[in-house]
Length: 162
Image (cartoon, rainbow, N blue to C red; front, side):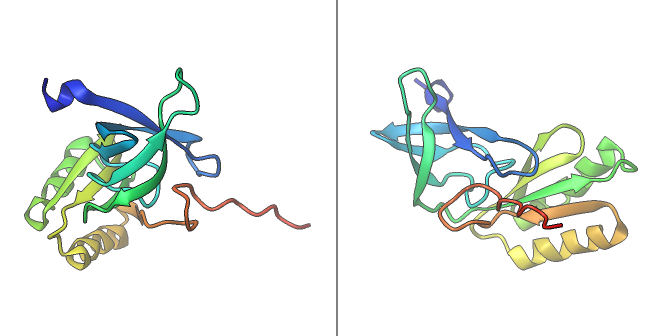
């Protein structure tokens, strides 16, 4: 059996996220409740490619939900949003230019990308290039560190006081 035959989806509940209520990630089952993440997260914070996580299903008919990170892979995640004025080809060309910095990417549509920074990546060099693109008005981007300690979710929005 190949790795692709043993991949399964894990669920992450994100009730406070700005764009979605949850995310499913591909993972390799390592035995017991241990799984290695096999794709770059598009929405969850504080998770990265190849992190080993604990996940458990609340019932037999549900996907296992990620509970905590057991082992950090050393990878980092950034997310990039390109503006409407940029063609898909330009977006892809810019992202491909990051390969020499040990950056790969996955896409969600034509303008939203999750970047994987390998452990040996010079994160400052990548962020400098992204900062340049942001100053040009080409992109917005976010880092994916934890927003709430112990959670993979975004921080809750406080109700406005009138």
